Length: 199
Image (cartoon, rainbow, N blue to C red; front, side, top):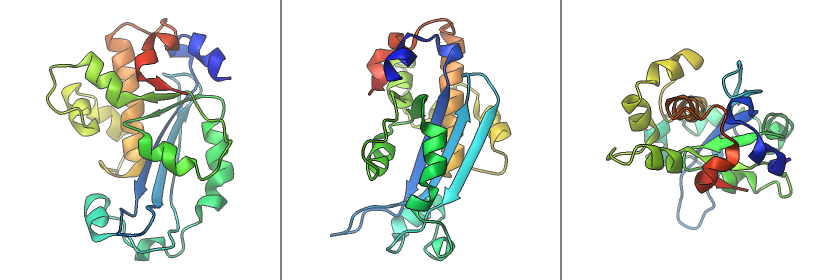
């Protein structure tokens, strides 16, 4: 499926943007996801389906991580496990371009389920650096502000903020949409962005 997607025009692509928030790295412990957000569209500019959930974590959330995303250990006590969420995650990420802003963490957490076959993956951080080389800060919020698309992110997932998994996923999707339009690449094949893609 990934090879077929590489030939498709960007505007026709099924896309799922994903973000995880994590418990934070603690000495001698493995990091674990505490929140997931996915925004799926059947074509790049189509109507979005949003999914988000807290994720039960076997260890406490680090203070430094909680300070960033506001998620505490107490908030996760009744949350579903990663395995319980897997069928929904699999449905949303299968058969599409998977998008994230520097998605190394997302790829690592999903590797807990080997052989899932998701991808290709597009890194909007690499895309933004290429398209906006003069911008000093290519963090997701700064890029969206520079492109003046933060209001679109707000409209897609109202009541959220940066470092909420669903909001960050929506930000990645809106960034890809904005750069596709701004660079007039709606009819360009995905392979034209190969510098930002991993499979």
